[in-house]
Length: 157
Figure 1 (cartoon, helix red, strand yellow):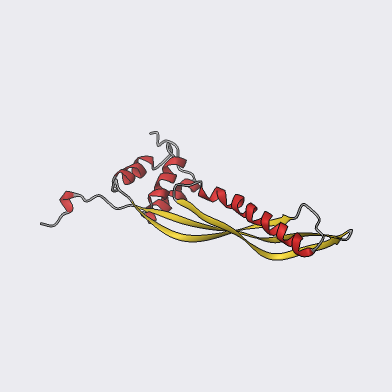
Figure 2: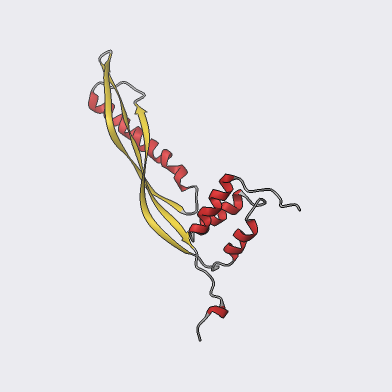
């Protein structure tokens, strides 16, 4: 008797996560990752048994990603050197946050930079500064919720 390929521990853990919740994204990810091993028929059946219309709940979220920025030029005063780094940090924060919007369930609302520590040095009577900080990414995250289709035989008369 051929039982086919046995599920890996990873697949079993994924399937257990699918069974614990009603999140259609988790179910679709499971099907995309393991389309031909164990559980695909039951997973597809569960997905098909959900409402065609889904409810997406959106929540605001802030993600902070570390970044380090150094000035590229030397300036006559420290203030100008810091302003240069802040301009570069704002641009880098925008670039750093862009990959967060690669999912249809994520919307990038904006980005800013926040300074953790400054480092400034006088080099041959001119200033160069740098900062350690974070790119603060404002995002809206959607969670796709499923609802079971109503089975007419379960209705109470």
